[in-house]
Image 1 (cartoon, helix red, strand yellow):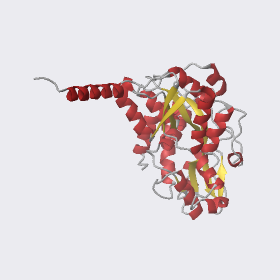
Image 2 (image 1 turned 180 degrees about the horizontal axis):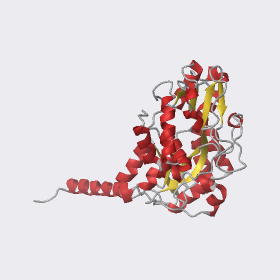
Image 3 (image 1 turned 90 degrees about the horizontal axis):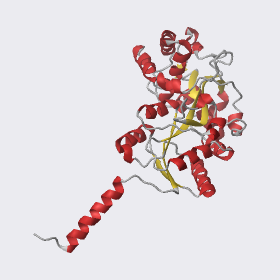
Image 4 (image 1 turned 60 degrees about the horizontal axis):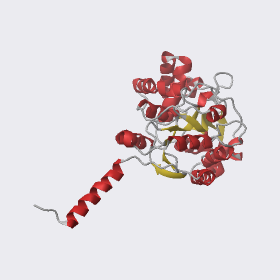
Length: 343
């Protein structure tokens, strides 16, 4: 039986197409980003990098866990060079899955504080947020000044938070475990649950809206959610921001709990040198301003100013616990929330 020329050409074309899909993307002039960030200012940041270096950026956006699963499925053939996501706990998950690699860069290490980067360079903070206490000024005259005080019975029926499965809540409890030990952390989680005004629900913006409506007296949320309400129109929040007070907890102790948006070079990066150049660029003054202003966060590099709205929230002393500890304690934090029935 003989092949017809047209069938042979079609077969060759299909084989060529399959080979192109299976091979990792590689070019000296590009870098491939998998990112869960989705802010317009990031686009300007990327275009500035390309203008300065000639390196083309290819961007894949998605939800954090979806991108992690995608890289795991792609394995050694993954085209991803840089993974960007929010919360050190998620970066820890990616690292535990073997998806990130060590980077030694004097540029990054000199600019990013030690507490905001992996001890062995597997990821680095690119912007920072604080998880603080907000309160309704009409309902609460003496708000808690520490995270521990959130479990004080005098605040019974006042507190609103996200679910205990949420990564921000897991990281907060992970820090509490690191500072105070397992038993104290479980006691705190039980006390926090006992003080809830309602079952945990929604996102951080929903907790702040609860303060405006009066359903909540105290809420735990990241600073940038409140800053959004101050900077622009967030229905159910902006019109009531004057009702809300802010406390940066533990100023006389460990300092306020902080977390990051962070980035790491992938384990199978086909454009590793360009990926490192990109991470170093992320620590530049212009890039830090883009990151911080794009999501109303704080820069990770000292002497780079945050937006006027964020600066207006007030100054604080941050906890210097290395954020990798949040990931290490993540599983135990979830167990504790489950044990006390924190939904």
